[in-house]
Length: 121
Image 1 (tube, rainbow, N blue to C red):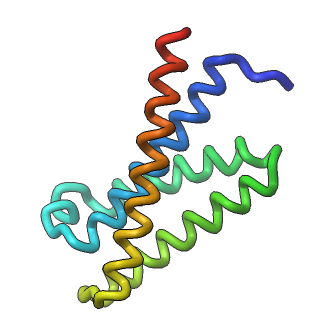
Image 2 (tube, one colour):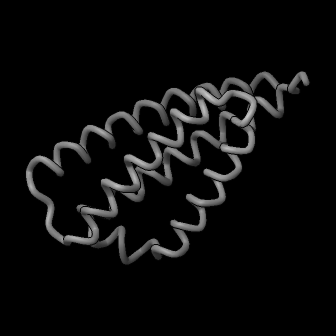
């Protein structure tokens, strides 16, 4: 099945949303204001909806679907352990910052791509 350019843009935008939500989740480990201003249930709902949407789309490519699932699980597990303990040791802080940097780069690249797609539409 061939996808329209709008469909392709929507898929890329869904990746951007997911990466932004994952970054927001990690930000909550260090930022009390982020935890208070963005209710956990709301963030979790957005994460779950976006992840489910992408997993359905990615069912056509099990390799990419598996990679994204592993990435989400790793980030969510890291953030959950941090939020549960309430304290962040230096190793965990480094891991969170590394994941955050990766998410930032992916988000910027995909966001630029979405902007170009939309400008061409």
